[in-house]
Length: 413
Figure 1 (cartoon, rainbow, N blue to C red):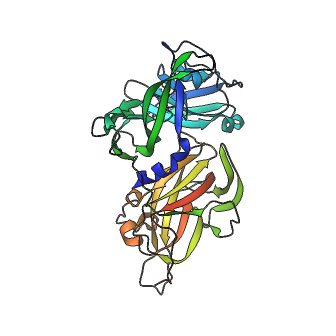
Figure 2 (cartoon, one colour; figure 1 turned 45 degrees about the vertical axis):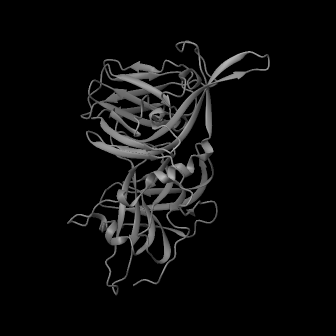
C-alpha cells in the first residue's frame, strides 16, 4: 500500500511543541526578516477575472489545528480578497514555500510556490478556479491509540477534521491537486521554566501521512496507515549522488533532452538529476530511463517513491511528468513492448510522489503511449523511465523501491 511508505519516512519528523496563548491570536510578528510582494491574478476556468474571491496564504508546512499563524507568517492575518479585476498584491512574505488558495461560493483553486523561484518571473502568478473535490479516508492506528483523538490536516491549507472512533474522516470541499494529509494527536502539558514559573505547552505528535490526489468535481479516497511496517523490504534504486551514466535520454524526432546531476536545492540536501526537455507537443516525447539489465518480475511491488519539482508552473497549462515501468523487447520476442505508467502533476517546490500498482493507468483499445497496463507488464519490466510531459525543466531525486530488497533480473524472453 502507498501509506506504508509514509510511515517509514515520518520518523525524522518527531514530535513538535507549539506554545499555547491564552486567547485569540493577537500578536503580530515573525522570525522572518525578508519582506516581499507578489502580484496574484485569480481567474475562472474561461479566463475571466474572479472578482471578490477570498484568498488564503499559508506556509507549505502549515498544519491547521496544530500550528499558530503568528509563528508561521510575517503577518498572521494572511486572508485577503481579490479586487474587481481578480487581482491582489500579497505583502509581507518571507523567502520560503507557500500554498495560496482562492475560494468563491462554489469554486476553489490552489497552487504551491517557492518565493525564490518566482524572482525571475517578476513576482507574478495566476491561479484558476475550478470545481472542488471530496476526499474521504481512514486513519489506521495501533491498538493502544484512540482514533477519535486523531486530527487530520491538509498540510499547507487551512483545513482540518477530527477522525471518528473508527478512524474515518472526510473533507467535503478541497481544491484540486496533490496534497499531503497528516494525522496527528495533541495533548497539553505543564512545564516549569528556570525561574519556577509554570506554563502550558501543546505537544503535537505526528502519526503518519499520505498523499491525496484531489480531483475536481470527483471523490477520492485515502488511507493513512500509522502502524509499524518494519518488515517491508526496501532499497534505494537511485539517489543521484554518484555517476549518472546508467541513465540515458531518448526522444522522438522533433524533440530533444538532456540530463545532468546538480545540487538539489530548495531545501533538499545533496545532488539531484536535472532533466531538461524540449518538447511542445503531446505527439512528441522525451524520457530519462535506466535499464534493469534484464527482465524483473515486479508482481510483488508495494510502491516506488521519488521526489520531483519543476521550473515554472503555468496554471493555464498542465505541467506533468509520466512515471513508467517499461517492457522493451526486440522483434524476436513473443512478448509485446509497452509500459505501465501514470501521469503526475509537478510544482515548483519539491514534492514526494508515491506510485503504487493501483495508480497505473488502465489500458484502452487505442493503446495510447504503448500502455499495456500493470497486469500485463508487471512480470517483465526491463526499464524504469520518466517522461517530461510537454517539456520544461525537471529535477528528480531519491528513487526508492518498497516490496523488494533488490531487483533480480533474468534474461529477456
